[in-house]
Length: 104
Image 1 (tube, rainbow, N blue to C red):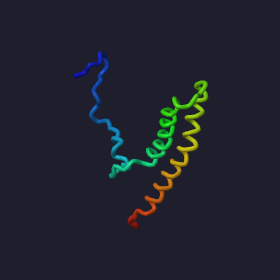
Image 2: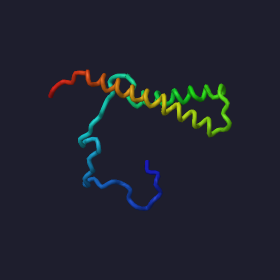
Image 3: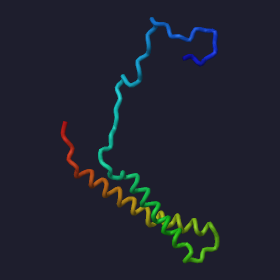
Image 4: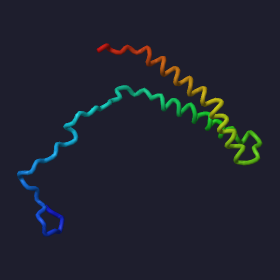
């Protein structure tokens, strides 16, 4: 059913060549087989957890304004979160180094 209101012929001529679909070209598909979280997840978690912990600890300290609270949260992310992220990266690299890869 043609829903276009035009006076021109909208049918495709039978003798014209159709372009090949994009799927016929070389395509690589990467599949994650395991459900182990990636390094990016662990780094984000290592940075977010100290920030949330600092926000929970804010009522126990006498901060004067919002800038002091933001400073405290950022300091917790840098002092606690960055070493945790580095530790996660180290553990991930050591774990992947031990995996045996088949030689081609």
